Structures are given as C-alpha cells and as structure tokens.
Length: 351
Image (cartoon, rainbow, N blue to C red; front, side, top):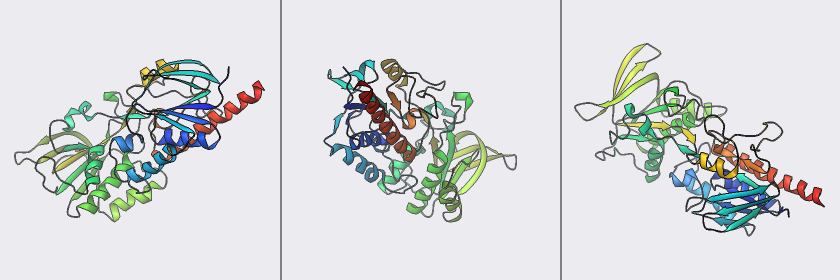
C-alpha cells in the first residue's frame, strides 16, 4: 500500500532543514533523521563564526532554520539516530532506525553533507606538529570567542598566514576537486582577524583565487583594499619552526619565480570539503550510487536535478559535492518540492 503522506529527510544541516520546512509547507509530513545530537549540521557542530555572504553569526542564522522545523507540527525529529535498513520502492519505503523504530515514507531526501578534510593528511604543512598551525574551522571558533591568540602562548599574533587549497585540487593526495567556498571563506576570515586585531598582518598564499560571482567584489577586493590583506601567489613546500619559536612558511613565489621563507606567528589551513566519510555505508543502506570521488551520484541533471540513481530518493547540498550554504538551502528546497510533487503524481495515478 502506497504511503504518500510522509517524506524521510536524512541529515539536518542547512540543506536538510530547508527540505523539511518545504515538505511541511506543501502539506506533507517530514521525518528528520540526524546522526548527531543537535540540529544544524557543520555550521553548528564545527562552531562557524559569521556566515558568507550575509555576515550573520551562524548560531543565529542556522538557529532560525532549526526553530522553523522544531516548532512545526508536521515535522518529526530523531536525533542521535541513523537509518540501518531501508526497503521498498518509490511511494512505499520503510526505514528501520538505529533506535529500532520503523518509519514509513513515500520518498527520501538525502542531505547527508560532507566531511572536512583532515589536515593530518598534509603533514608537511605543520598541522598536528605545531600548536600554532590551525584549520579554518578552528580559526572560526577562535573568532567566535572574540579574541585572536596564538594557542601556544596566548600572545596576539603579529603575522598570520592562510594557506589555500589544503585538501583541494591536490592529485597527490587524491583530492582532484575545488572545494568552491574556501577562497571566499578565507578572505572573509582575513577581514575578521583584522577587525579583532588591527595590528595583525594577514597573508593569503594561493594558487588561484576563486571568489566566484559577486563574491569577487564583496570579499576579494574588499579584503585587499580596505583590510590590507596581502595576497601571495605561491607554491608552499613546508611549514617548519625557527629557533626563535616562530613558524616558517617555505616555498616558491610563483610570480617572481624565487624561493621564499616567511616567518609567521600563526598558520591557518583553508581545509576543503571531502565526501561524507559515511557515504559508502549510506550508499549500501539506500541502494544508491556514488560518483568517482565518493560523493552521492545524481540522476540525469536537467530533468531530474535532485534525483539519485534510485527512483524516489533525492539528494541535496554538499552530499553531491562541495557546496555553499546558500546553494545547499536552495537545493534542499528543490529536493523537498520535487519529492512532494512526485508523491502527488503517485497519488493521482493510484486514484
């Protein structure tokens, strides 16, 4: 017997929250299953500071999205829960949860997100060896506290280097994709550092700058012209430590073709977006395909935009590849609307 009243939403980050709210607004029940004990996804779990491009604090912006579903009678929420078994066909699925509960749903939206690149996989750049080498997520957490300090001794840094493309566009470590948002996040982070510590000089070391669309003016040029961020086109070889305790960024300035050794007080890795580490498990449970890098594979792109390789299962956000928060939300809305529209078609066909 078809169940066209409910849609299962797996993942409660920006994409999943957007999908659930859309489903409920269209007259269907949304059932959210989230493996973490909180809603909000990476912006909340990783403690992001101000979001790009709005500049609003993550806890406030994502908090409103969370409130929109927690206060909705047509949204059921299961936290600290995973789907362990999944059976059926479009219009009549049954999901068994890790709690033992069963959920019947006519369609599924996968909003399972991504995993931050682990900088331990780039050991030559000092992460895990030196206390004052951080990731962008750790730096965001520091910004959220309102103080910029070197973890090793608490001093205010005179010089901070942000290294782009850590875990992106690097075939040597199997990351053959651009993570799309790192350049913009890094230029924004440089401005936040300067706002909190005006005496700190911030350097961004890059292969290319990809602040796409309107971000070029709002972040790239603003960061240079108003906040005096120094951009250095370079190939970084390693990060070591000098006898006086400062970090040394070593590499080649690729514009002037000469070696560089630059002393820094802090080094920040602009880490990329990896496929969700659980994607092999997710693919097996839901019977869907993964593309060659390990992200969730999509159906025909132009007529089934949010579809997966299995009918009745839709996908959105960074589950399919690196994505911005704004686009993840838009895709969540699209996936939710597509799921409901297809359920109405199934209902009409069975009438």
